[in-house]
Amino acid sequence: MTRDTAPVARTRPLRRDAELNRRRIIASAREVFGQRGLDATLDDIAHHAGLGVGTVYRRFPSKEHLVEAMFAERLEEVRLQAEEALLNPDPWDGFASFVWKIVGLQAEDRGLREVMLSNAFGHAQVAEAKERMIPVCTELVERAKASGKLRADFAPTDLPLITLMIGSVAEYTQLAEPGLWKRSLGLLLDGLRGAPGAPSELAHEPLDTEALDNAMCSWRKRGS
Image (tube, rainbow, N blue to C red; front, side, top):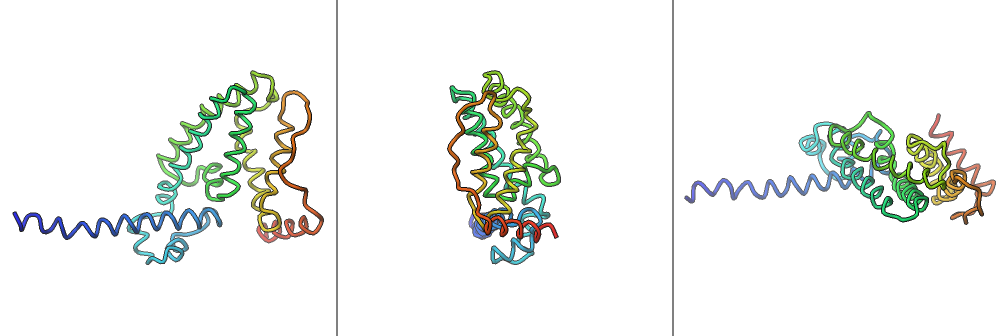
């Protein structure tokens, strides 16, 4: 009995260490991918986590596997937020609140934005999470259109393009004015209303000339 149970007892600390390393890698990946996008490498993440590269590769044989582990759960959170928005009795408020939430998530997490807008990363779990999300987002859009509060020519496929547009504003103005994307989104949502009305109060002041120049310099450096 003692000989049979001893090997099991010796392996338990290794399993705990492996799980701790896994969590450490994912936590570092959230930060690195969130700031630098999916161009970051597993070597970058290993350095940020203070682990050897071999440790990272043992847990995640490729960057795609790490993206899968990180973002499938995040995408499911987005779907649940869309379902929550459907419970809002006002179709426009439900639609607009969801757009604010999803754009906010992606404005603060470059990696999430790239996963949402690309099929290049992630395996079955990410693909399945996207497939589950599409019908809910479509229903959210169609409900708002049926109420007359969202312009009739808006399509569900316009939604990811909105996140791309505002995500770009967030990326290129994050040093000059980190919250400027909120102003841009407020202006955009006013333009999506199905009927004219009083303009909404914008959440951020416009850039001054110097801040705009700084943002443009950031764009040129990234695009060079």
